[in-house]
Length: 310
Image 1 (spheres, helix red, strand yellow):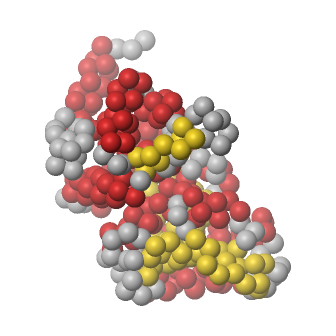
Image 2 (cartoon, rainbow, N blue to C red):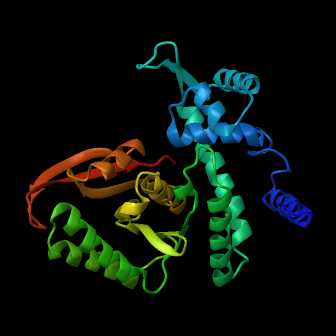
Image 3 (tube, one colour):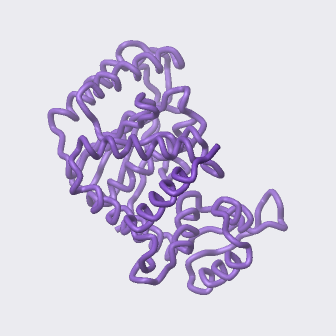
């Protein structure tokens, strides 16, 4: 039985939260877009190829309103339509170069608005806030977002995390691909250098956490003033299949753009198919490959690069 006071407390929290994040205020990009319009652009920016039906279902938007909005976007040169290869009756929607530029500006603006809310909060309290938000998402998360992904929160590194990163890379890659202890030694060297030379303005480690347990990691480190390196992407087996790897990579790319890098590169191996699919879908291009036996079995090592917009 739901108590009336529970309903009222829930409504009170909802009013507070919408007021706090500014949903009831003006539009984004100096009023050019409403919140709903920005959400449509955001979905297209993340996936880039949707049908109108898929967007309507994902965002629970009225089909008539969505149709009018998409026509406005098309007239403004923000989106384009192409026939679906699997069903010629369907049209796939994607952002034009101008549309992607607008999306990236919206994404930066939204990120900075949220960052401004978090900056005055002390780190310990901020961590508690992230856990509480994760709990809310875990309990209420339904619809298009996978429950397991909704329960995951990303945070910066803390004491003890580096040891976990080394240990889990060593165990998982040995178990799944037969790599020997030389790979674990390589990971240990990477995290050691990261800690010793850490520049918080241009480098970052993200730890993915679910219910207080670490389930993933990724690093962005400086190679030069203009080039960053994405390193040590890891997702625990129980957290795979729900988009966490892509979320981690996209967070790296967002931070790299804000930090002023012009490109991001990474080194991986051809055998790591799931990771390679993420890199391809997020805009990385394969630029070099060579055989090696650095961790035991012979493998094709690959270098991938993504150019960042201004």
